[in-house]
Length: 225
Ligand code: 5RP
Image (cartoon, rainbow, N blue to C red):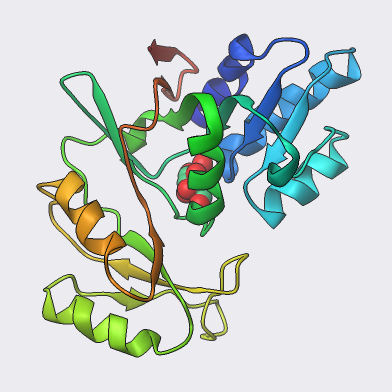
């Protein structure tokens, strides 16, 4: 048992028969999907809405029934991981997109009635920004956006694959990872990034999560609602 597994399995407590469940992306969600799949095999009826091609493949392998985001009326609960989690005055802020799925993850999360983040305790931070903030940009003219971000002092680095070719998201966009230490005002930064032409989405998830399940290496999980 590790923290990611403990957090992923604990999220099952929130899943009820008949629910439509947003399925996040990443190594922590992997454990949630495995646990969910066992319940489905035992008769639990759920429908998943995926946030990436990676999760779609995994959910199909695990026999979790899926539905397209276009076809759902409501998502009851969305379970996803995070790269950094910061809590202040009861508000939960985070950085997501380490796995490149931030756009679909935000779309699914914003459709859900309840959002749960699952993570090991290494993801909890005293301020955001040590993790590079992913910004998804259209390919056309992306170097112009890169230069604007550089001029703002945000030190973008284009995400690359292992063979040094540009990483592309499931939507065919590029990712620029911004360097901050720290992010002092995630709300105004989110607005600023969103307003830049060529930016499709950014990895700041400000106050769109209600529950966090954080577990440590002993498997002990702390739930905050
Ligand atoms: C993918 C994400 C993931 O949720 C995030 O990167 C956490 O991943 P992991 O559970 O593997 O640490 O935002 O885009």
